[in-house]
Image 1 (cartoon, rainbow, N blue to C red):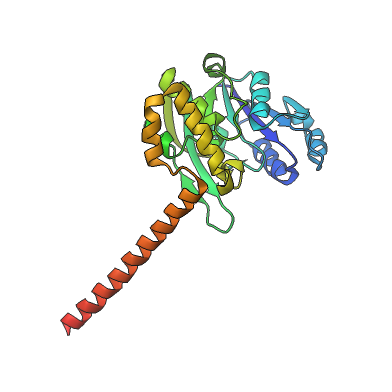
Image 2: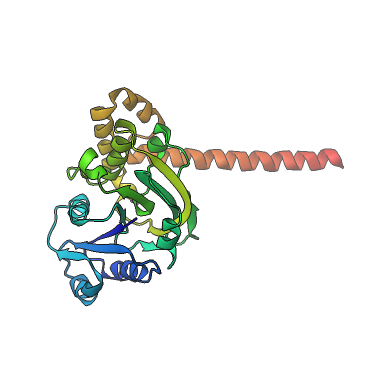
Length: 269
């Protein structure tokens, strides 16, 4: 199984350096490595040039956004599967590709585990869902940083929708799995260290994410839209209010437990 690793970057030279280092240090070497840079001016171009003898293809030109850059990479891919490891994300150790190849895989979409790195917090392992359901996509999605996608799917299902700023990968997975009934498998291999400080993880971008998700569901599954809206807050304000409510409920629960504990001690005397 030949694998294409695609990295996109825009003015993130430090993150790009980590990503390149993690890919080029792999013990398994039968892969191609593509970097699509958005015309960076922070030293990324020079870093890519320094490593170009290890790259299958690279370019550094202005693009119209994340998904435009990802599509550029897909169109240059010749591997059977694509894996997106964007600047700032890293393969978690030198044996990742070896561990993937050992799985003897044949499914269309193959998802592994992510080590999620948030500033100020200990890294947490997020495992790929063993089974696919709409509920999973209502709540979150499959992380593209740990998901191998059969390259031919992009011809069958379509490339990433460049009109979207945040949810084009979410849309792609929904179309591939539910409309085209692509095969799926979860593997217990931790693939990437995921930088959880990107555009899709920022609270201020929640309204855009909700609006784009609504658009996807309205287009392909309009009867599921009302269910989705019941399960998800409709704005950043609603999201923060829900968090506030949860904190209040947690506080009430803690106080109640303390009162019960005190009463129990009094009764036990």
